Image (tube, rainbow, N blue to C red; front, top):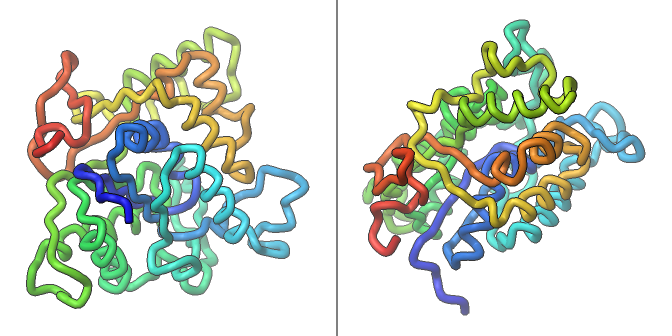
Length: 307
């Protein structure tokens, strides 16, 4: 039986691929450093768009089966990052991808037709209890999830935020559901973020290089989408550029959702490893630890015993 790492990170994401986009480099860095990394994915992403023509039949509005396929993509991505503990909330298939539509203002909203057993419709306490059991088993010092808007408004991202936030609060109450394990308080909670200055810098480099299609509609000097965070609201920047190739390999493993000629790879090609190798966070709970020269923590475990 392997020894439990002293420092442990728990990430809660909505669909396969969200984890690699948001924190793939950080996950790979912490695995390499011997820290515990546990990923909980809330749905199988059954409603996702299929970008591979020969696999279009897997789409939810055709033959179906995309969720099972993305389960395999997630396993492949985690193998690239070295993450061995990845789970689906309540077990695979417990909650269905809720789907989404685009609002005229440019953010995601719930669609007109919501699938049965959609994660968006899940009972909050029931869903949180599944996560409480994991929290009490893994006993992480740090939790990473989305902000209250889920980055860009996707219903499943918002629900993942709600479930993670509620579960973290319930897990630390000794008298709450002792059958789910001994109570555990998570010391620090972070929300994944994208640096405004870094995003503008990246967009400017892409436009200067003649790329006008990646991140279409985003002006380096104009308004940016809600998933971009003003730098003054950032708390941590984890430099995992040494592991960025693992992140890009994990992104490539999610082939039905991300293409290697898409914006993520284009940004990396134009700006370099730091485009996706440095990942940013807002702090939602806990005291900020020692900071780097830019005033941001360089380690999510900063200030905690053993870090």
